[in-house]
Amino acid sequence: MNWSKIKNIMIIVLVLINLFLLVNIAFSRYMSQSLPEGVDKSFVSILLKHGITVDEKVVPDLYETREIISAQAFDVDFLTEAFIGEKVQYVSEGGSLVAPGGDKKLVISGNKIVFTTLKEAAPKDEADILNAVKDLGIGFDGMFYDETTGYIKMKVDSVELEGMYLDVYLDKDGEIASLSGVWPDIINQGKDTKVSVFQAVNSICVQLPKGSHITGVEKAYVLESTDNGFAVKYAWRVYNQGRGYLCYAA
View 1 (cartoon, rainbow, N blue to C red):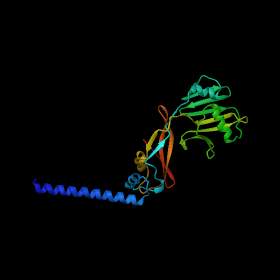
View 2: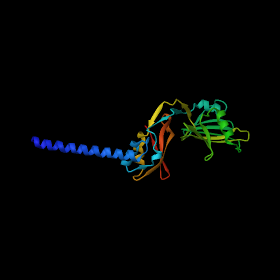
View 3: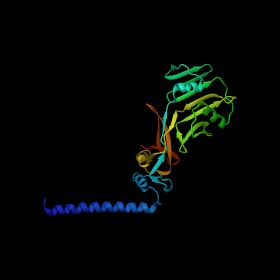
View 4: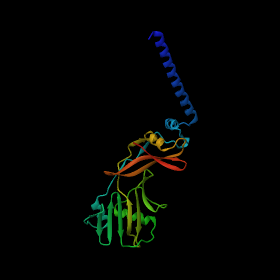
């Protein structure tokens, strides 16, 4: 190949590189003009490349500080003393651990606790129900009564920890007549982690159909059962046409 042909190829390559750079600069300027200051333009541009648009006002910060929390199963001896009033011998029934105690029965099945008695349930207000759970020694900061479902739930960083709940009924004396739900031991380990919304972008793009328009983005905490017990995962909930999609951060 002679020098003239080499020069022509180099010129063509340089022209293509310049065109690519010009297109990127033009796109960046367009994004800067169309979005207000402080909006994460990279997040928006990644979604646009997948044919997904987003309301400017709902774009989350690039990073968010999250509570570091862990979850583990309660010690079974602790649970028997809390519910039955004394340590009793567990028996295995269909893969579940069962602790009988006279007119009381505690069943632990995987990640679920079920406690029953022979007492009849009576109407009680939410404060009584919350106090009864605290008296057992399994109450947490952030525990609240959800009037919509009638369940006790938990908030972390003012956000509901999904997948953790208790369905509780009291007797006429304010004692627990029955209780069921997923309720592990929660340990707060501080506030020194940051999670990036970019870690969830690929998940968002996979879940949302092309042409979607994101109308809301909010942070979420999700309790999941694992081989080792429990895990609390960081996530975002992304809304499209009234439907929420959970997108996990790494």
